[in-house]
Image (cartoon, rainbow, N blue to C red):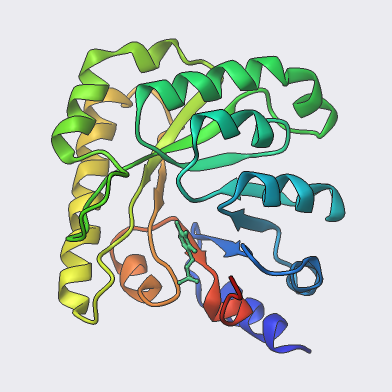
Length: 232
Ligand SMILES: *Cc1c(COP(=O)(O)O)cnc(C)c1O
């Protein structure tokens, strides 16, 4: 068994039931993804549209592709034919573009065995670092209250995603994940109580996934712990 396969098997063993592993394979060659696949891994996460699009046909059909990073609007069409979930939606315009491209590529999605709708998560900004990505808590509330998202039938909002601060201070990380978990419950109650679809909490990476698991995560996005350091 290879190192990658040992890590995959270990993670599958320790993740609680109901938590799924997204193996973050960005910048790694297809051979490494194939190793992980052979150990039973089926969900792969990529953060560049072109890379995801090129890797998809090189892997078996039962792989689920997740786009995990910031997605520019003009790249939605690149991933729409093959992607199952887009993790970091932070504007109405991006959501509407995903909706449009899912419609446009309905035939390709169907041929690939994908459902017509693209699952999406709303990105909540909880970290200390300044970044232009992710909704603040206030922006997220305004976005949901405004209501236009309800028209996007082919961009299906399934939960929240966040990234914690890049810090050694694990209590800070825990506070941030708990903030996201609180927001998730508040939003589910207020806007999604009639649906079972809003159920995913995407938080936890190589350095902080054990804490994320204690804070309600249902999707952990783990890269370097599985595949080793990335060569950019
Ligand atoms: C790269 C990346 C990850 C994985 O990071 P690791 O530290 O390698 O586990 C998770 N989430 C997002 C959004 C990323 O861009």
